[in-house]
Length: 342
Image (cartoon, rainbow, N blue to C red; front, side, top):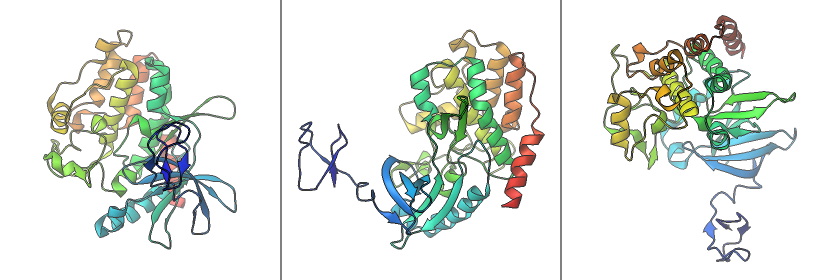
């Protein structure tokens, strides 16, 4: 099948131009998937996006009628035994984890033709990066109320050994509750490790790419993900990597710009590893000094200097805004119990 890059209508391969727009038609590699039923259960309805893991589709469970998201594993990953083992191991961990502010992983399956895919909760709404474009800069209070649920998810996940590793605005979904309130859901928790993303074994930036794809999102990668060895000598990425990324997201939401921008991977690495963190209140003068300092601490080059948990970061921000700190133990206990009883 071919599709028009302007109106998105699809046509047979024998058609060269869109009869409506006159645009040259492009091969639509995903059109063949639409209408297919995977394992007799999930009918593919629409292509949504192409991600680092593979293609993302909206689908429907043909018996229950439920909308779901289907994420397929790229073919080069399917034929790599190490990636496949990692995908299966980490996928099981992601499927066991449950939190009201995290998108649920329902299943991992292999279709009869060898296609490996994941079935996930379908969430209506828009991602935070789109909300930033629509809304513009957030006030500190608005940013805090938006990201507090994300911090809750991260702390619960870290407590059971799950690290996101690819935290960014595109992985935060903003929607509405039934009573008109704001709903926040974290996407792709644990998926980065499933496909080998988010870790650099050495400082060489060539180790950060595979099959032409960047492993991780450079704007939001921590120094240790770029291969910088932390003072504690640890080689495993831990929850403080997510705290770093969360600090970067707070900065962008409130300042209206990313703290580090570069034209190449080596330059981006240098900025994350060595360049001083800009003060948030230089970009947004209404930000209290203590709040700006909390964001800067979250973005510390060495993880030992960051907040130990996302909740600790949130509470420092709350105090800076004159709000009472939140207790964290109840959220962690609930999420851990759900993990244990799966």
